[in-house]
Amino acid sequence: MQREILKYLHDIRESIDSIYEYLGDKSDFNYYLGNKLLRRGIERELEIIGEATNRITKIDSEIEISDSRRIVDLRNWVIHGYDKVDDVIIWGIISRDIPKLREQIQKLIE
Image 1 (cartoon, rainbow, N blue to C red):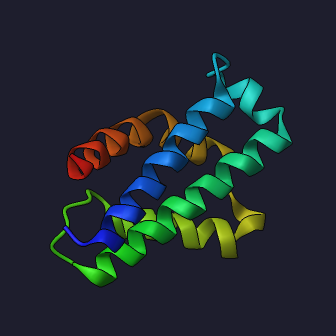
Image 2 (image 1 turned 120 degrees about the vertical axis):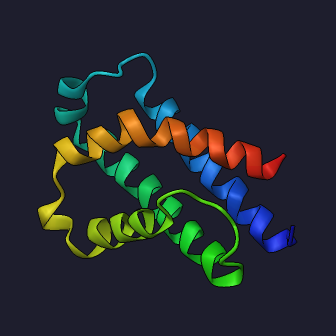
Image 3 (image 1 turned 90 degrees about the vertical axis):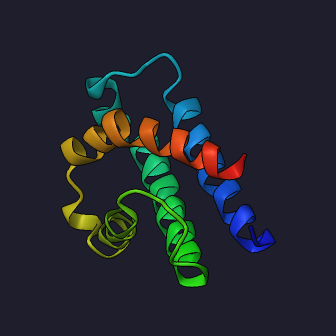
């Protein structure tokens, strides 16, 4: 695997780990909803995940990242449609998609 791709995979994993760190043991939607700094921090990490995924797919489209197009689209939505970001959708991504993505990225790194 190319060094550059491995760097982006590490960036994705680091952003996922940061999301978990930000949430700590407060994995609760109401806590998330009531904390603007937390929401903005997580949105930034999702932007990084999307940008790194985009760069990986441009270098090697054969790298298997499930829903890579959806990940990049999320990045674009958060950045360009910041005023339309739906906290319920973001929370669903955090709860359902991020754990699966972390597992997949870890396997690619190994």
